[in-house]
Image (cartoon, rainbow, N blue to C red; front, side):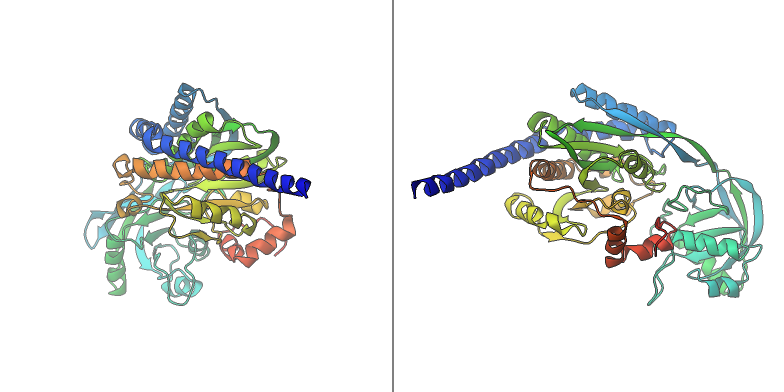
Length: 469
């Protein structure tokens, strides 16, 4: 009887001490994040001294240099993991309407568009870009205009499908009307595979696009002059990695992309994630440098041009035991956790949602994976991924991929709050020996993707990597 009682007391006491120590560490991490934030000023340097950071560009390389310098100032060592990659440079592109009157359009070339001889020709409107609309519009030898607005009762086409149809029907160039008002022409990649786009493809504003659409619908055929000097080439880039080695080699990966589009300063997308990850590095180095599992922080490159760096990282580390990957892309002040379909993590996430009562975790825990950010290469290799959902103010996301994405939009409060919560999540994951390494095999991964209908998007974008359907 006494032995049983002693065992019970030891279990209870052990659990209490563990929780108490965890709770104290949470307080230290949160207090330091809110009171001693270092990353806001680091992001200010990157935005002001580098500007937009397309992968492979001089500004991108300078941003990496600043990041590593600032980490080293805190006594944190980092390494660059270099890789070969397609590189895209924006040139002095020009689209001018020459009839019915002369007007230069606000036009943004899509990533991977290559230089071609100047084009002069008529513009035709092909609606939502379906095969039927392209055929009816008689686009051969002309510049074609399409809308990004979603059609009723149908899924909108992807950029890859639009461009493929334009080439198939013989168009000489394609213009996309933005679905956002406010003179916004959003930068986008022509594809997520790093392949040359074999036709000039540009995003234009909603307002100018609607004007051209109206002219076409009234049989007033606009004439355009298109000059494309952006170009595609091959080169080198790198990810930046900070390692906190644990008692065992199995690891938690926490990542954010350091690259951005070149239109603005990439302050929110993804300077915000870059800064949060820097702050997590600082917090871990002080309050949790040694854990049961290893923690690896990765600033990925080339997310905007097709998740290039994340894909390269997964390839380089394919034999590593990665328990989970946490991604931060335009992360705001935390409002919830997303298990991304890996429901074995729900109990931990639900515990955090309840116990982090000083934060507004109003959305609780969800479990819905999504595509087109750096978690995707991990998902495709069967590795569980997690996301911390966050709130951004309207001015912060309004200028996504646009010239208005500048440092003045960034919130130090949101960076500090997100850093605290995500750091706590990483520490909890890295100190729970009960969490087992679970990697889905190919069949299980395909089943997972089909369950959440991610296979449909991947196939439409030409990114389905499996021979099996």
